[in-house]
Length: 462
Image 1 (cartoon, one colour):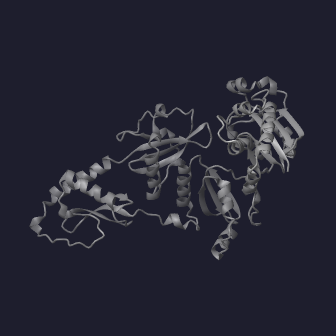
Image 2 (image 1 turned 120 degrees about the vertical axis):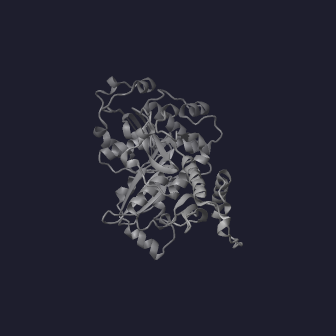
Image 3 (image 1 turned 30 degrees about the vertical axis):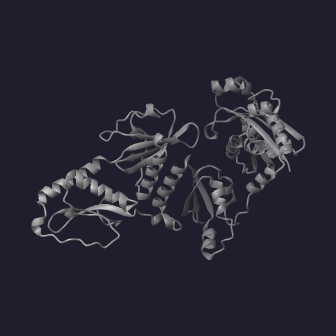
């Protein structure tokens, strides 16, 4: 087995908006180096000053250097059919995958991360950064933050890990990442493009119609799981046979992937997304006007045709809200009904036992107005799909209103400024519940908004 041990320098921290400025590749057979490669690369965009200060690579140095297109064939030759090894491997891998894709190369190889391997093979180190780890292990580094210097140090670190790996951790890691064979009718290039990041994936049939939408913490791994296993039922095989193309959308966080999955299902109603279509709340507090014009408040099992004030997962919560409204607004208990599993006796009342219709209805209207006024409005600010981006989730009046992404440099003085037309959504109970459950777990990510106005200076709070 041969390894391509790699280090790159770049113009920034994420592959989608930055380029490679330098690359070093060492081909290794597990015992010694077989081949070395190094070049500066002209990124064809300015190198930021803070990157110049970190790496020492200036715009002048790369002026006469080749572009990636000019060296792509040689780099592809070196990396193809070898195990890709790097410190924080996903960083280097993502940049090269982006460059190869732009140049028309389909590139997918197994990879090993010396950070993860070091954590398993030599645990309890004070730091696993390349500089600190090599210093603690007595591995010399020259030309720190230059591709050749860091790659040489990674070679020595990898050799050290190979020697210390008595439990065959490296071998087992490679076995786990070995690619399974896809069904022959599925476009292999679609699969090779799948990232190992959080997002949603879409299965399309031969004509391009979406037949299934799924969410995943690791898109590539989750998609692959659909084609592995021992379930050979006719239904599963029919589903797999329908899949011809695979698309994906990275989302940054798991919550964004869940919401995106729901939104896409509501837009396309894929035939194989049966479970989510049926998801509804279990209980509701409803109101209706009876034959004598009294407005009644009732806690009941969910009915999509009923006029609901609020939905609930548990009857206790609905009963508590009804009790609170009855006490605060002195609403007559004879015109309210709690949910109960028992068929308890309900007394019959005479007409004169009931309150004045108008007086009662006024109390109920005030109670309903209070519920509307207490509707929650907030925005969740979280990580985006890359370091220069944030995600947002806007909740208005107890309902998910919009979700999407914005650049961290964006100046925001009004939360509506974040919302693009395509990011608005028609939510359902399930999507609302996902957001409300999330803010219970992560209250620090929530910015509560003024209920009377959308003018909220949220930028300073981000």
